Image (cartoon, rainbow, N blue to C red; front, side, top):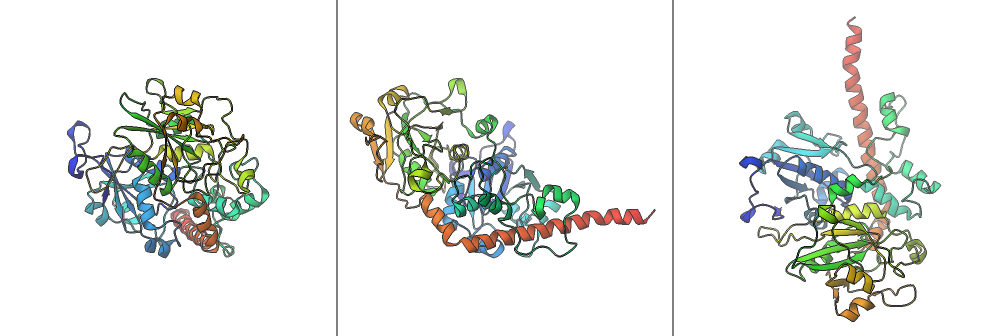
Length: 461
């Protein structure tokens, strides 16, 4: 087990409200290519109890039941550990959730999204705990899935952020990604009710839907904490695209620079994101502060003359970066852990991100540094891309002596993730085709089972 240190010394969780026994909640999954949809599921699960334990499956188990994962199990363990609502991570969790597992970790019940997870032979992985009444559901986050993100990376199209501008190529791919390679046998179709949920014979859980950002969603993810006296305000900036362990490793190193750090991540607009994805890490430009009187610590970047970057990533790199749009990237970063150093089995469980600035300009100006009282600006050990006029975007913090370069020790980049996907394209396409074929077969079996009592009743009259 890997504990994140939210509980008392020694790893024991705090008592529940009123001194009652804390409610322990279990979640499990692959958590491959962790995104804000995963984080939102874990947020909802944590709200159902007092202590959240998350089991993560091994590469071998995932390959057996679904197909090859994008990330290794060690990478996936670390990413789940970095989500702020997770108290404890259980590596090598069984693919099928049983009462034995819940009892082993003293969990009252398990939580899963309102989609379905099947074994290689098409069985519901939560069947046993459902029958025992120790299963709860939370709402699936619309507009994002691992399937969708893989599709974006395979196409590398310019219009994957906008349903209005979605290219015909991407729309065709979005409509077919994960679809069974062969049409179902004659007569083996979903009911009219099922068809309304699954247009074109699709199931309701796989594929692409539009993500709609709301202020409520930001409030749910944000901490609302402002910098306190004695804290060191550290600013890092970049795209934070496909938020991954390379980002987490960097933020962990930044956190160690001060006894009481207040780390602010500035996210560039989709149209002004600098081409940092091919670099091991490119943070380090602007800073923001918390909202007034406890408001969510998420603020738009202030208007600053001469601070934006004219080139879009598409034009600058000839590729479609960022993969995720600004709102998606905002939630991904906001989900990053905000917990103090752990004295338990986890080596560190720091407050990686205190606040996010949405839409950060590129250059760090004197006006920005003074306005937000920045103590330190950090950047990775990578090439610094000049600003539009050829100037160093870090010249002001360097002049003030508050610029610091950090070696994250990680070589993982968004580009490398995309390369993994493209290299194994056929395997990932086959994986999703297999996944959806199983889900459609399960839906059909459920429909037939539900229809059977009705047929019997009709025959009795």
